[in-house]
Image (cartoon, rainbow over the protein chains, first blue to last red):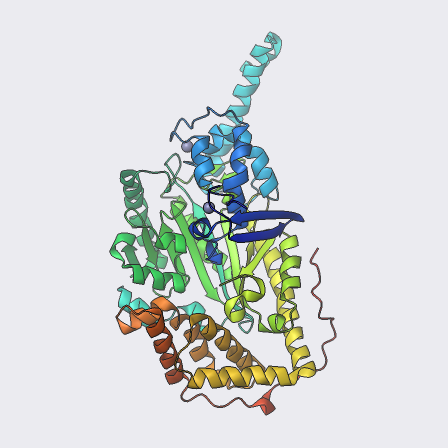
Length: 153
Length: 374
Ligand SMILES: [Zn+2]
Ligand SMILES: [Zn+2]
């Protein structure tokens, strides 16, 4: 059996973990298991590993030519490392990431801590985003009446 | 603060005074944070990493929690010193592999450590003895709130804190506890417990090694998910599960005392004998034997005031600590010899196990099968 990460060497480490009732399996060669920190359980999560392997295929759904406009990161890079390039990558690869996050986490939206700085600016920018988006849609649909009402808003 | 001073003093978490310290060795909470629109450390070029480091490091050092900190650039620490920090759980193994463009800043009490440019720009960690996840969270949360006023953290209204790895997105929080579970291992119930806990979305694994192979009977339990749940809820869920595991462990110990006393005293006696008289000991053997003696202290077979000596040996017999204290590089054979020597010296005044002092509780009422926490 070949290693799931490098797909070159024979797998020597076999991992199974049950997360939310779903069985996840990963087979690794000696080298990759060391590199991925499997020997060091403090720094190791199977989800991380799976992410680096299965996730890359998920993210490809977003179109293989996508490149993050801020940091230049591509899907090929994600496939290699299992990590993203910068915070804007979450926007650039949003489509592929969504289903991935859904499978990986309890929910799809953050409900925890809110930075105080963000509390104000985010509320504003969110409202702006919604309005602009509504306006764009209305214009696209040539729904002038509605688009006017959005403008007034 | 110098590295020597750090070596000389043990962190608060190692003094084992926290709640439930018989079973819960330590509690840790770490938060991952990143600067907006800056390449994550794994993707940033050396120059950008260094620039980010210079932006973050002074902000961390000026925190009131960081008076006279231990603050070092990773390239200024030797491989051995980094390894010592890993053995003390003050930095991650991943961080120890870093060099130019990364740093570690920690407070004198070794309860708060901040890694700059690990996998994320900032990894803030608080570690406490016993079951104190809430207290640990309170400290990192305070530090995070102080830093967010000075640094522009990457935060998204929908996804929360954005991290290099999507497994950490949302709260960016990983809460974990290190558990000492010799009772569950000796009564072969540990795998059932691990499976039950994994089913509810928490991870349990051997601190060194997997499942029943876990060395020193030490296990780490932590949250797997970070998105869709409040920090508070994650910690409550963990606390509840940990409290159940503590109960199971105590039940298992009582069952052993009542049903298999000879096996138990044999294990404790052998551990005592080997630790006091052996002249060569691997790290694995030392961890396993120390674990049994620690159990002996919990049960009353050894006096309570010997606890610290044993707890410290768990850390001090690790390879990097051994080499740091001898000031020389040792091969495996020399390490095993030196490890046995240190243990013998520490246990010189250690009394023989006295099983007449073992506290027997009434027959446990709960059944010893692990329940599913659903
Ligand atoms: Zn491999
Ligand atoms: Zn990017």
